[in-house]
Image 1 (cartoon, rainbow, N blue to C red):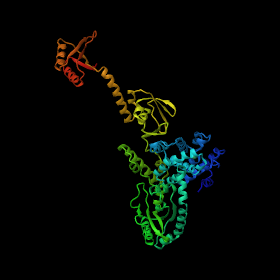
Image 2 (spheres, helix red, strand yellow):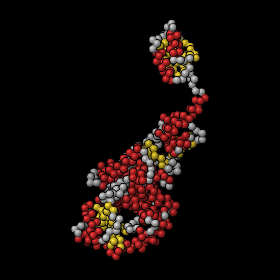
Image 3 (cartoon, protein in one colour):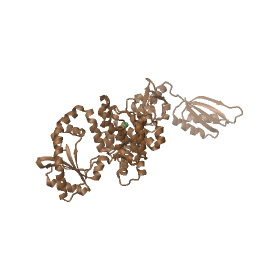
Image 4 (cartoon, protein in one colour):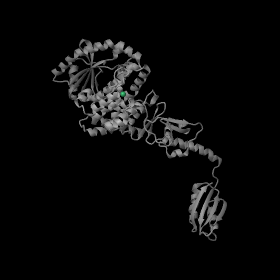
Length: 565
Ligand code: MN
């Protein structure tokens, strides 16, 4: 059902209400393509509807550009549509402020930051639906912008969709970005493969009824048989691995056979192999051994009529759905493969994340569909303890909750940390102990020759910052100490005096082999106690402690304190 149909079906519902506001707010706006702006939120909401999302998400999809691009304040959305929809719209607006400009190796953190800022997976899903339509209409933008948006899509949003298990969407986003990122290769691919694509398509279309008939003759009733052309972006990646030889690509166009059960999948494979000889080493059982990203299917290539190859993908409906929009991709596997070292603590965090995504999907696609449970499952709380702040260049710094600009500075580089003199957060001068929030843009003001302050140890949250501060302070102190290291100890002893007490105390000191450098007494008027001030020739703490124990054994000694000088 389209959004317009949904509106007609329930003209007083929340979707109809959102539609009306979007229509009004975007009334005078046009897209760069020349069409009415409303088409964009309409397409976004339509995609969300195709993904079977809830009414609030579809309504938020309709409203997602009203706060940013028109004069409708968030307060109005809140008043008219309630907290939930306002929260979703606000989340998408915040994500819109993140711009990726190719900041080297921090893309992984940027993807995490998007999830952390979203707080709710539905925000990410609205953003993905929004991006899908923007990519489909990208030709209308000026070339510089095309390139930036395509790169962001290819490096941030397509992998994000993949991690959420939305393999089909991920592939489509990559495919839409491909012509803008690699225009020459795209043109070459189009010219080289066009004929082949067309003849392959025609051949498989002709084979389709034959395959159906063959299976039915063996009492196998396929749920569906689809013909799928390989996407250009993934074809190009594959060609790079196959010496750019199009003859080596067997799955340019494949036939997808969807069966009801797993035994039926294997039975279908047998029937197909009986009818046409399989190509050696082209049989892959991803049902018994799923791909690390969770992909499940049987693959085989056979020699069909006219000595032409046919690639088959055989799977159940459930696997089919999962492969399109299903099981969470294995984040850990990906990171390990790229050779990134992850610490034990980080590993635990990653596992929680992957686990939570899986739980989310199980609940979302599983049988149990309690709506409240579903919404709870959408909460992104796997980054509860992390924040993601950005440098003005767009590098994302991943920090623990409560981290400050000083932590941020030390995570850029110890030199930046040590010479940190101030910080601007989102363009405003901010105290160095101010806790940062996800999405903050942090600019560190450095001053040459500046040294860390001991005070920083009070508020920094990361070990990296703490260790570097201590190291820098030690260096500073070592320098100061060589100038005037302590040479002796000053003792202050409170006593109730008696004849011979001074002698007893001096003897105890002498027994520890200390020289008394100075000794004076003072007796406050009318007081019961006297104070002895004694300087001894040591700065050894253990020896002094020993002396203190000995002195305390003298009955008239009431209290002893000491300091090095
Ligand atoms: Mn939009």
